[in-house]
Structures are given as C-alpha cells and as structure tokens.
Length: 510
Image (cartoon, rainbow, N blue to C red; front, top):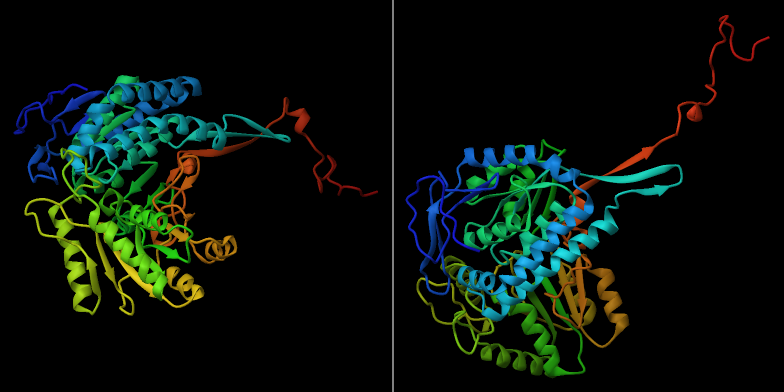
C-alpha cells in the first residue's frame, strides 16, 4: 500500500500521511479536477487529507470505462473471479495493520475496533463467494427449464463513514463476484481508507476499469447516480436515501439497494443476571460511539424498584466507559463521533430534551473544540414525546413502562424497521415481541448491534428496501434468466388449435 502520485497537477500537499489521488479510473490514479476537499481527524481536528475532488466529467469517464470493461470480467469463469477475491483477502491480511491505522485515523475508532473492522473485510471475501453460489447459481435445471444468472452491468456503490472499509466492501465484493463493474464513491469524510481499499483490489488482480474510484461530496454522488448505471447500492441516512429514490423515480430499470438508519428499540422484560443485562444494553447503545445503524436508541425498562436497580447500574457502567483517542494507552472503549458538528447536534438534542422536562442521567460531557468527542449519554424521556428520528451518536433515550404489552406497542411505534431487541427470560414473551415488531434484525439477550454475515442484513420501512447487505447482497448484483429449450425445433412442435386446412375449410368440418 504505497502512495501513488496523481497523474495530473493539483494543489494538494505531499507527504507520507496521505494519498492525494481522488480518482482511480481504468487502472490509473488521477488527481481530481473538482473543488478542494479536506478530511479531518475527529480525535484531533487536524486535516488528514486535502486534495481536489473528482469532477462530474471524471465521474462520467469512470462510468464509461466501467461499462466498457464489464463484459470481459463477466466472461471470466466463476472460479477466476473468486480467485481474485480470495487474493484480495490475502492482501488485506498482509496489510491489516496499515489498513486498521487508516481506519482509526479517519474515524477516530480505537485500534481494537479498527482491527475488528479489518477482520470483517477479510471474512467478507469467503462470504461473498459462498453467497453467490447459493443465491445466484450458475446453472440450475428445474424440470424442462434452466435457471441461470447474469450480472447487471455497472454498479454504483456509495459508502458511509462509520465503517469505511467493511460496509462498502460488503457491496463491492458481491458485485464483483457476480461479474459487475463498480464505480465507488466513498464518504468524503474517509477518503484515505477508500484509496487503500481500491489499491488492494487492483493489486489482487481486478482488471483495469472493473473497479473505479471517485472521491467527492454530494455533487459527485449526484453525478454518479444520474449517469448510466444499472444498480445503486447506498448505505447512509434516510434523507439521502430518499433523495436517491426520488432521483431514480423515472428509471425503474436501475436496481436501488438502500441500507439506512434506525430508531431501534430494546425492551427489558426481566433478567437472570443484572450485570450481563447492563453489559448488553451498553454495547447496544454506545459501541462505535453510537455510530452503528443498529445501535439502540430507545430503551424500555420496567417501572418499580427492580427497574430502578437496572438503571442505576447502567448509569454507573456508562460513566466508567472510557472515551478517547485511538492513540491512548490503555485503549478506550470508544472514540469521537465523526465530526464536531455531529457532536454538537447531539448536544443540541440533549438540551432540547432537558428543556422539555426530560432528566439527563449522565453525559454528554465537556466540549472539546475542534473534535467529535462526546460522552455516552442517557436521558430519561418517560412521558416526553420524542421525535421519530435517528441521532447518530451515543445518545440513549430511557422510557419506563408499567406492563410488557405497553412496552411492545411503544417499541413498534416507529417508521423505521432496522433492528430491535429484547432482554428477558421467557421464550414466549420473546416470540410475542418478535411477532409484533417489524424489523430486519431482531435479537434476544444479545446486543442489537450483533449481526451474522451468513444472514441477510437490512430493514423495512424508513430503514431501507430489504435487500442491501449481508448474505442477501448477492440478490441485487445479478438477475435471473429462465430458459426453456429443446434439442431441435421438431421436438417443440405441437398441434395448433383452430388452424384452417389447406383448402380453407374449418378444422374438424365434414
């Protein structure tokens, strides 16, 4: 993973701490010709990447190259494409320390969490191969017919900042496995991770033009979606997802896979281990500084002394969670949120809730100017109406309830449907909860943030359109072809009803 100098002049600084090529098109690293883009380390406020972004013309060039390069990639055997993906996993393994360092530097994640993300990037290679074979078989004979699958063509991948390697990788690899070409626009907040990611794909043997990178802001994303694409895979906010849906409203031929946020509930019924219950809640709400789309946003706890005890223990544990820089020793539990603005938005919400009569039980801590640091925060909003939206940070809304049915009804009262969870000892109660809740990920006695790569991942309602990630990612990367065939045309002939005879008489007439 060496620095690659841009092929066109830019005003970007040089140095060992960053790569300053905003585009990778047709196998070549190019300097961007768009406006200047800066990415900031949220743990220090220092600029870590500064360079001109991609221009609309460069986006158009990347799409044209992808369309031209895709057919030859699809014509390779499944085994050849799988071999490239396996080689990519091997290279990531070799470069795991450098990639983890970049993830920490751009997101502020602790080293332990960045290393975990690299593990998921490596593991996705095998998952993508296995899922392709299961969900999009090369040839499956069903009676007189045959089912095959074809690549869609050019897939645009728009990646997020919270898992800048893992989440786009979970869409890029399935797309490549199916034979598509990819044009990838990462979050403008995490460009260096994207450069390293694409560099490793190219080194693994992905042919020139099959994977292309365009780094930039919303204008680059709009240009990409407006161009000639066959599918768009997006991970991010509901607001942006809806804008994409609107932009493609008159293009039904474009497959749109949306993985958006969630206002995720966690209902506590009862427990057989108080410490374990509190552990699950804290990991559900505050891991990754609350920047997972599956993080618990609403916690329902029974009223009464037992519930009080759980809340007290949760507040105590939360106040002992260390929040710090990736370079701290010992390592912290979590780092900052992605920007100072994101931290301020969370603080603003806490202030608004307090003004409305809510009780702030702990957090959000002192402001660290120029950084995204904010402490894990618990606010008791019982009896206070709260907005059905997602604050992407370590903010947990606590609601006390009087009976389980009331809690289940309140938990399901959301336009989102990504994740939900329940803590309790009764399987019957969990079955009731699962039947009542509309969500794509429902967990029992485990964190809402837990998911398996061998299961589908996505949500319903405002959380997405069911098919964006996990095991089911293969579904939006290829289309099924149903073939009916015969060895000869005579074998497929049949009498035609109502056919007139040669002399013009009606059939069956005397």
